[in-house]
Image 1: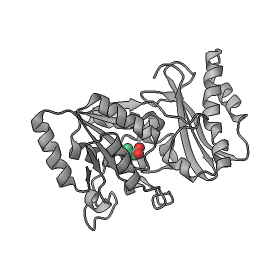
Image 2: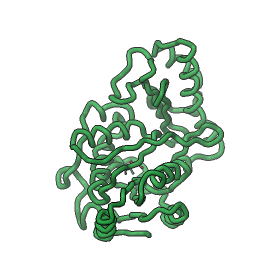
Image 3: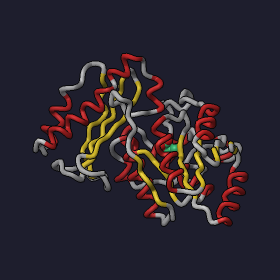
Length: 286
Ligand code: PAF
């Protein structure tokens, strides 16, 4: 069932809560692919009712980012959700989410601001305000849908750590489930932004997963010095790649690592054909 208003969603949720159903929420920005599908399947396996939100959230995009051209494929997304047995697809307008005539700025709108330490690194370093926008919309979705569990992809690993921190710090009674990255056979992590790449660009984009796999291989051989690991990684880059970062941080706290160990997550962001791509890999268990 496709719903566009907060009120209609809340009415259904009220009914489900009365019946004692557990509710799973899969927050998305649409342009659904197999990565999202894995989240939906996990939600279906573990919850009685599943809500997928489809909302390209304006307040998590910077002024020079791709908000306007972000792929919007609501018909296909709804069909896919229907075929997976999703109970509600919630696709509100920006006005429905933030109010008619509301200026989308933290001068006039209440924002959730995750801690500086968590946002001042990795993607947050170049995407100023991005995680404020993410946490704000995610908390709003949590309040609207009141799920027992919410499902997020590991591809946005920094996002998941920050959402877990928000949930913990603000006593939000929702379990955050992180699901593994889904990749093409080539190794390319699935992303709605892969649509922007040409065939050659997709080949060049394999550098992200190649670097991560090579780092893990070197680590398994006993190399723990981060400068050495970075050095081998840089050898994969050509003039087709504009590396934004390659970082080694603690998988739970995002603290910088001095030496690589099993609690390390390696994260990379790199532009290919001007498209900003991210990927990551745990050196130990997730
Ligand atoms: O990961 C995303 O697609 C978005 O950041 C999210 C969590 C749906 C919030 O808009």
